[in-house]
Length: 472
Image 1: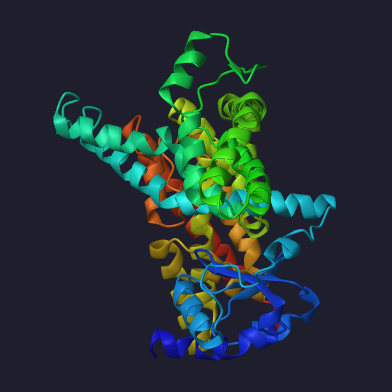
Image 2: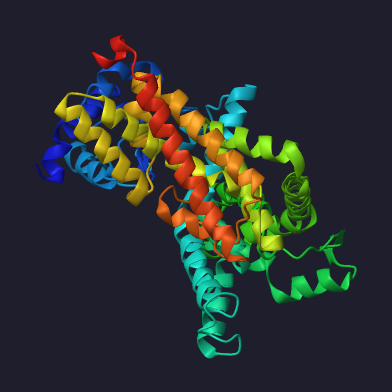
């Protein structure tokens, strides 16, 4: 069956099951999920959507309904756009501002909005983090610390080194762009805002500790290279400023003066308030996680084991982005991290859980699905198909997944496993996090992953399934 035929059922029925085209205000997708912003979520027939072919799961997140597909989500997305006439990655409702104003101001709603925003700003930069990690891995493996094939003075070593550092140095520019896309700002203005934050003149003022004002307002200049929060906060506020000038600037003047006035007004807000606030937030969160990583003893070991056991639940709620964001800050400042990334073995628990299910299941179609979930995790780095298709479907395997995470995390904590780059994917490439430092560190990373995978498989196999769920 071709990919188009595979998602034919979904493409033909999903829009109607969501309340029709007029009920959808925005439609996009991420790595594994179709994301629909709905005007009235009560019109969505969630149970019927779950029964559509090749739908792994359905989840509500704030004002958004997410349909979990897996690594072929792009194919499903294109086919739905073709069949329904929905616009690809664009606002479907021209009066989108009115839709976006209907915010949930409860604590849960605000929390969901923050997590959704972090995800929207950071998910798109994953490719540059992977590229950075690959270059840094090459310098670590072939450089003087391991194989010593490339001397530190060689052009190739220097090239790979600064190519690997570039992603973190220019992080505010990349985040400025992705935040602009997330908050509905002209993307090039987001890039400009990120560029302003890391301009050498501002960095020089910060390093010298010189007095500086913006339109007479005192500014506590900071070095924002490798930062995340200042750019996100600045672009978020800029979205309201740009919307104001786009609405109130005469059409004939808008192309020139709307973007200029947007940046002009954003500058004092960003450089005098949001930039220092974001820097302060990043610095103290970073200090907390550095303290956790350096605390040692049974407290650190158990903390890593517990986080590893619960990691996939954090992924389901989106809360993992808070930890990943912090990890990026710590990595940018110190070049290593030994708390959050030590739990990366937890991704392998999903593959292990699916292996245990594969060995236990009897029906051929269910066995083949479980096998595909293992491949999706180990090779594709996608854990959601297994998480929803086995874990949440049969429930009991989730205990195996947690046991595997706890065991792998326990070993990681005992051996003081340390990450020297960040590869935010859930497949075998995540082991590159631990290349650097002494060779045994990398070996311990592999052992932690093997333990997590094996324990999850064994416990899942031994516990079996809830017979009622198995019959579904």
